Length: 208
Image (cartoon, rainbow, N blue to C red; front, side, top):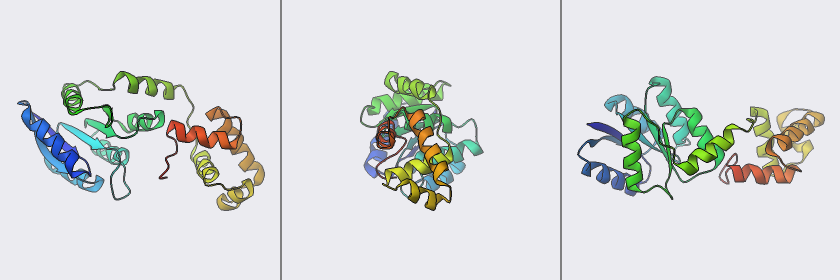
């Protein structure tokens, strides 16, 4: 019997998943959680074989952050991320966190989730072709540094070079260097295009 922890802040989504899982003779719901904090507590208590993890949850903790905490406690944990996002960066960050599968809610139906659970429980991974392609594309690209991410977010907010320097307590020359590095890494011709590309790739989200 494969025991599953279902994590999603949407009660209807949890209900749909738990009902679908309940129909399968070799699957059973070991627990449910509506937030990252609750997921961690239930995980410790029920020790599930597989976790289906929502990407966006309340409380300021994403599914990726919750996955990192779970993996830190149990490196052998098997997490499948269910997300509304399908950008290269989101998929990459999930894989870096240790997920064994990634499905988009708009593309993956309940049967896909069941298939992913069965595959991951048996020791495999589940990254559909489109997801795998985006992950492979992202793996070929350089990571942004923590400082570059700070500069990028401030650019997206419309701050000038001087304002960015004042906020981060760095020189104007250093700000310009970071922006030049951002343009090169993102393949952008100017600062505006760098921000646009960052949103397209999922490095930035509108709710950041």
